[in-house]
Length: 254
Image (cartoon, rainbow, N blue to C red):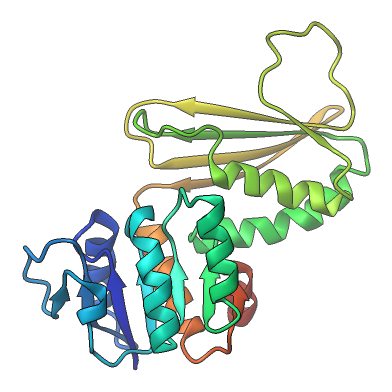
């Protein structure tokens, strides 16, 4: 049984994870951390992370960037591995993550979905076939109207996976409206759609002569990210210090 601390337990993702772990026989939430303690979660909640004295194997984080500094200090003091899901970290915080990983295990990924991370692996093989055959490559992502950043971090991760398999020879293009010319060969177009309540749709298109191959991932709820984080927590518990990502989780489950 893996014992975990839920950092950001009263947020939306924290509550989704709480519900899923309650049905998981191999994991238990033994404590939560949040700025307010206003829910009956079935486990103790600490508004100050340094007051948490509950024994655990791993921390899963879905909080806010402002809380990450104390999270890293706490994990280093307690020697607790962290599944770091909070986005929007500053360069200084990313450096702190790297430094902390020298003392504890940290898993960080652009997207926690098991499906997306399996797709990242599959795309490398596909790129070696279609890219070298001269197929054009496009990435199209769709998200809800409230999402502020574009393109998504996942879209960039998908493009990076393809580009790395092709020797990083391709340039990314986000807007073709200001040029009038034929599409260059070494280009990956990345487009963003924003509307409604779309949770997340990503398409990677390989377009050749008389055929198109499309890899698609559609998230219908945020539960897919919560499920991935839980599997990452099980994987990370007991691991030695270092930086890990979801590719390590996928490989361990293969």
